[in-house]
Each structure stands twice: as structure tokens, then as C-alpha cells.
Image 1: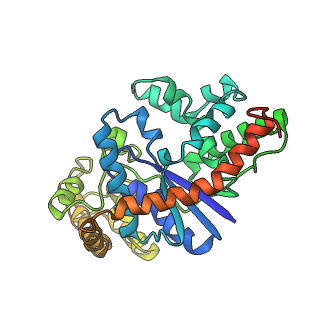
Image 2: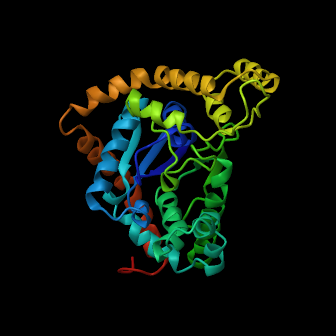
Image 3: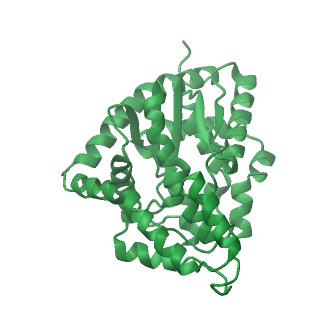
Length: 323
């Protein structure tokens, strides 16, 4: 069973990345026969225009993954742009991808609705995403409910290619992570680097406190009942047991609980959860050459899988010399 997933290097990782992807990636390296994870620096080009910043984000993400427990000896961890085959496969797939399919992309429509600038890279994003998956004939791709459409589009594109040129690609199956909630940001929208509403788990205590205290709340007095579905409770719930969540919901509904008290407890849980990881990350950061060594070995292993699959697609499409 080959499991594949990726994360965009468009900013410093945050709680949404950790609970939505990174934590599951670490778990899958124990469960899958082959786990492949890529740092999607090509994808980041739709939002990041500074070359140095993009490289810093890649380095940050590698260190964060290693600190969270990802083992590059058991999982393949690589930088997307170190496998150039993905760009050629994207073109092959682009030629069979209907415009209407891309126009229905939720991510594309959401970016437009939020007033973000639109370019061809953003519009064609799902085709590159399909190439990322199909280039490795991944069997299983873990996704949250909000990303399910991405897998459906990949399957549609692969089916169109297979119908046009013959059976080349495995149709990936989504592993829907029903227990992974969309993590809200400080302002109540989905936590996203694009919105600037994140909590970065490896920030120092001072920065974490500033972020937690910035969580938007209403003006309900301390003695009045609170909505247990408010953003601050949703974030607190990420670090609580089911029993603790039930107790907190009851306290909120009774009244007498201040938002400030919940924020203080949330900060304490953040520091406790990521404390040991933060220390490990600091030690890893001191190892010269570690990040590039990990990425180079990951790219070597990834290309060994990708090259024959691309060659099969090229041959099926009549590209290159006949066999």
C-alpha cells in the first residue's frame, strides 16, 4: 500500500497543518508499506514571490516534520521541485483536462471570493496536484472532507488520460479523515497562511501567548453563558480529551467562565504539547547540512519511482522514440 500526501511551503507551519496533515503523516509511516511526503514548493509559487522566502519555508517545514517524529529512513520526504518529472507529467495531463473541471474547483472559487489575485498557476493548480499523485501511482491519499474534491478531480483526470491513451495510471483512493476537523484561525475562518490568522506551534512562549490572546471572542460578560462552539473553544478542544470537552461545554453553558481563562489554559496546553518537540527541533537546527541531506535522499528515492511511470505515460501518448 503506497500512501502519498503533500504540504505547501507557503509559510511557517501552524496548528491547522499539524492537526490536518503532519500528525497523520507521522502515523502513516508506521502503518503504510510505503509512505511518500513532498514539500510542494511549486504549488507555493501561486502565493509566494520571494525566492529566499520560499527556501526558508522549505527548511522550516523539514525541521518541523523531523521534530514531530517523521523518520526519513521509513518515509520518503522530498522537495517537489527536486523531481522535475512532475512538470512534464502535468503537461501531459493538462492536454486531457476539461476547462469546466478546473472552473468547478472549490479552492479556485474560494480564492476569488476572498479577493486574492488569480493567475494561470492558481487556475491549473489541480492538474499539478494530479501529477503529484499519479506520478507515484499512489494507492491511498489521506485527505480531510474539505480536500475531498482534489482527489475526485485527480481521479477524473487520470480516467480521462487512461481512456485516451490506455491504462497507465492507478486511480488513487481517498482516505477521508473524518476525525480531522477544519482548524479555525484566530478570526474564525479556516486557519490559513493566506489569511494571516494562524497559531504557529513552534513559536516561542511570548509569540504563542500573543497569538492565543488575539483569538476573536464576543463581548459576553463572564457570568453569562457562552457558546461552546465559539472559536476559542474549538481550538481548546484540539488539546482536550472527550470527557474534558464535555465538561468544558457544560461550564460554558452555565456561565461564570471567562474567555480569558480558556485562553490561558489553551496556552498552557500548547506549551505542554509541543515543548519536547520544540527542544528536539532546536537540536536538529544545529546540525549543518541535515535538511539538504534528507531532501536529496528523499528525491533520489522518489525519482526512482517516478521515472518509469512518466516513461510509461510518454510511451502511451506517443512521445519520444517508438519502442
